[in-house]
Image (cartoon, rainbow, N blue to C red; front, side, top):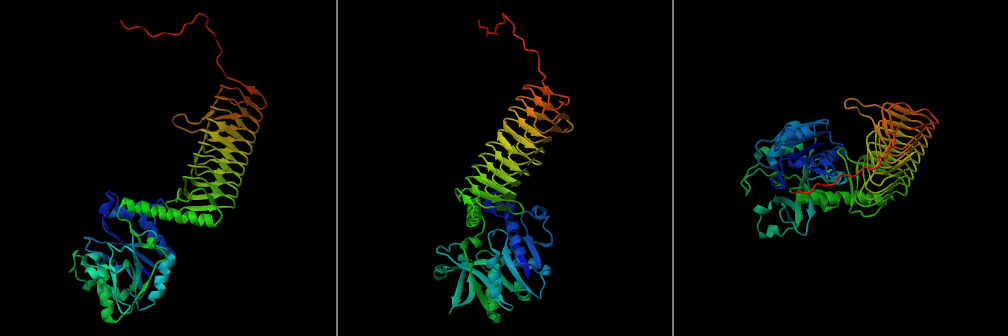
Length: 458
């Protein structure tokens, strides 16, 4: 199977300098959604026909291997576009034509279309719409497809037809190579219409068959920011329904976003609950009994069983152990690994640090480039001073240490096992185990001192 993806359109109604097919749905370019669908059906050869945006489109999809690129310049219509892909298409097999701005097409629908096409037929994916304005109409005589007429070229009777052409089709590649150079452009648009091959197939006696998608939204294209937002919500609702069918409790399926450049893989155990307005990006694993509060963002992370994530937390490239309590308003940055029953409270930030079982930092702290042992208490206002302006250094806090509030740990420094650091300490040298270490200026009270007052103006 050859697959040709048409992605040369300018997308004027998007009102953007970004090529239309690079706008994102669920965090992934529209064109990448279509490429992934083609991969899912096992396409042997994928050719993307690009034009507007030129190298910007190729550069953005550079990481996608085994794709042929055919430039359409100038853009003279869909028939002309497919013609540019013929040198990259094996003539001995069939060609499936897809569109880079139709991101929600499902592999199951494409397989149905391919099955209907067989070996020697032209197969069209059509749909029945109550309001078919703007689409080409399928003209039938005695039930047989005879041609497709674009709305701008249709008469009143043809405009009344509700079966529309989605543009997606399967045809023998050799026939396409024969038909496309013969297309004319005597139409309202002055373009070479791909749809004109239907009449050519009929004239040759080739069967023209049709298949239909399960849902109309599978074949809807993106031509404006409004249409993009509409399909985004369709996609997210589909994801939410799949999660709920799998047993996940979602407070409001209209207020969840699952996204990712390579496609989000959100895996959930039993009895997982997700509150409103949460965003999941990349590869996210939620184990049994995890609870996610409202307005959280989780990206490329693993959350252990029984952990509760309070509202307004941001977790990225981190691992949270079982039975933890995180937030509200906590931030776990890349490189964070938390053990069992770790508490990270409100306005606490952790970066590139490991925190072992049963330790806690409940208020207003920064733990960066640190190794924290078991049963450690980190008081409010504590920070690890890990950066000297040029280099990063590591802080080690051993098991059972107690760090008093408003403490600065100036790395590299080690707090020994069972040590206590008095509140307000600035620790610049290692603190020995099982001792109290305090570093404070002498407290003074000055009798007779008066607070300055504002001078009166003349």
